[in-house]
Length: 157
Image (cartoon, rainbow, N blue to C red; front, side, top):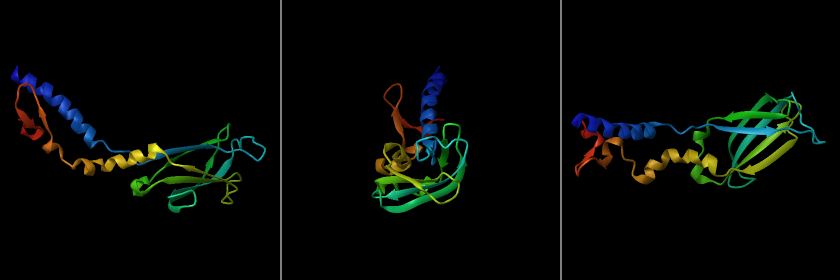
């Protein structure tokens, strides 16, 4: 019976430890619809795209840039997975994303928009939250089980 109690207490603790070891994704998805000057979708076409992350303001310093050619769907929609964002210091914001599009598939960007990045990308900063909370390892975690004895996870045998 004592072993079952230990097992029942250990399972939630292992779940917590597994959550701590989970990694924050360092990628983000970006989607846009490309439209012609008359407002019609640029459907099923190769388009050139340049995305730039600007620090401080809409005219700020470029801290991350990617260029690619992609194909739109029937509605003029394209999607990208933005990678290598772990190099961005999210605490030094605000950040803005400038998207430049060449509807002809090259690098003569004629369409440009700038939007402020809001809360979702800042979740990437959560990966350093342990420095705010003291940075304890799982061996330092203590909890109270059944009864009054407090034990660390590494005390269990």
